[in-house]
Amino acid sequence: MALIDAALRGALIALLLLAAIALWPRRRHARLGHLAITGMALALSLAVQAVSASPWVEYELGCWAQSPGIGVSLGSAVLYWLFARAVFDDDFRLRAWHGAVWAGVALYGASVCAWAARWPLPGFVLMRAVPIVFALLALAAVAAPWRADLIEKRRWWRGIVVGGGAVYALVMVSLRIFASPDGRLTPAVALLDAAMLCTLTAFVAARLLSPRAAGLWDEAPPTAPAPRVEPPRPSADPQDDALAAALARAMGEGRGYAQEGLSLAGLAAQLHVPEYRLRRVINQRLGHRNFNAYVNGLRLAEARRRLADPAERTLPVLSLALDVGFGSIGPFNRAFKADTGLTPTEFRQRALAET
Image (cartoon, rainbow, N blue to C red; front, top):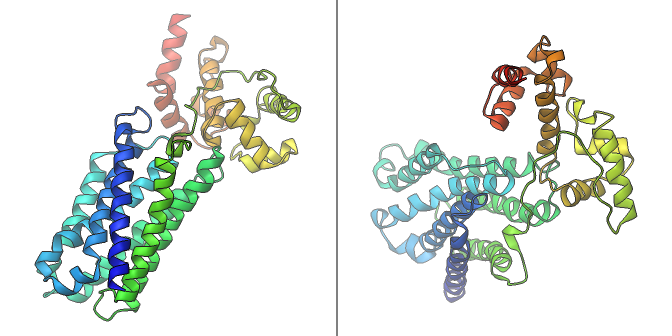
């Protein structure tokens, strides 16, 4: 069993290093750089974890010799949460506070030898809670945008990877709590740990390293929505042509974007089509990656048009925000400033002054 465990961990480390090398060229990518950076950090952190969680290290080395690996392993939970966000949130950007959270968690894990003797029970409870909390946050990052995600491949294979990884973290924490009196993995459980992590890593590495697979990078770049929804040019699929034309009518003349809380499922029901077909048309025909971003783009385009209209100069900004489909003024103001760099009032003043 020890030889099998060592072989699995060696293969796991090799796959993680290959994944990090495959991600390296994308680290400066304008849109995907944050995903590449978090992926590399996670891969290297898991490589350290593969060594520090091995039976030989846990049973043969002293506490202080293990503490750096424990810190890095605990910090993997934070990196996994950041990776999940980078995968599913197109607007995700790494911030300084993300690094601070990782450093705090890693330092806490690395200081286990200092606090274990003084307050072992609360200390270890907190140590076990950290991976659970960040695994649940990663699952939330997967589930929250799931229905609005228009990229079919990302919805499925990335969901398997990120969701499977969160389940792995929860299972391993549970085994450390309930299957071992001192928190160390038994040889059998350690072998299971290596096998599960190796399976997940092999799946990701296959996608990243295959010359015929686009892997993480198979999505087209986002396109900005036009102020008016025009029927797209014809394609080879008459059903998609008809659906695209119906969508253009519903979101243009019908002002479908103005419905508060509009969802992909709700719009598909209104158009009497399956969700997957509507998702495909909006993504592949119109070039959008996220349904909520698509709808908000139309709302903001209409808001810009009306704010620049002298005939509506007395219309309160709140009334306009509600009329184009935003539920309250706060989200409207934030989305508008992110889109234009100006508040709605500043945009109106500038636009009207120019006219």
